[in-house]
Length: 224
Image 1 (cartoon, rainbow, N blue to C red):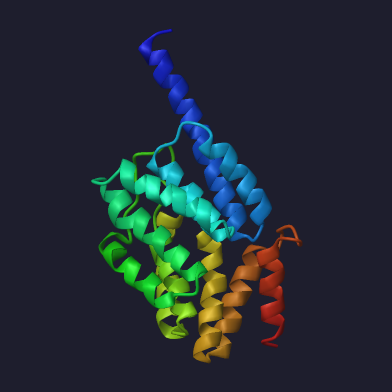
Image 2: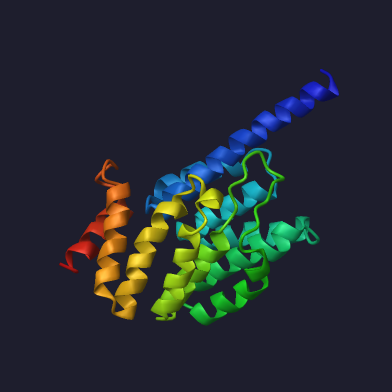
């Protein structure tokens, strides 16, 4: 087999890994932790680049698999110590998410300081450019964990202000929900209701048993 054919096979395999890891991240964000773990484990058993490792670690962190996520984070840092995306975006975001999982919002926000200049950046080294705005999303979660609703709202609104970067990433829809939560925290019930309604309208045809959707409906009902 020629080198070109080998390279083509590698790209196909990496694409499969990317889509599996990203589908795992989506499931984790939506609250389907078991399915997220299954898809991520399939992805990391095949050829991966740093974008795939990032998606896999982020999915595991959201799915509550801190130890496995930490192992990928450590490996990512060792493999790509000079890579701009890994060093200044992926790793700070991953470390911040694990800090939030451990209940340390202050540490999470500190971890994300180095990512701030790259918040609107996107890695183009993978087969699918999906990495934009995740540092902002996790930073918004950090502010909510720190009970700083206004600051959190600003971050989630920033995501909504950049649809061309979000494209079809799940955080585009989830930013509406998190914005609603931020407004609840800051005491603005009218804006909170509007944000929840935006999310529920986007997901009006979604499967009703998705955990994050059920949670959103429950939270919205309490605002009535």
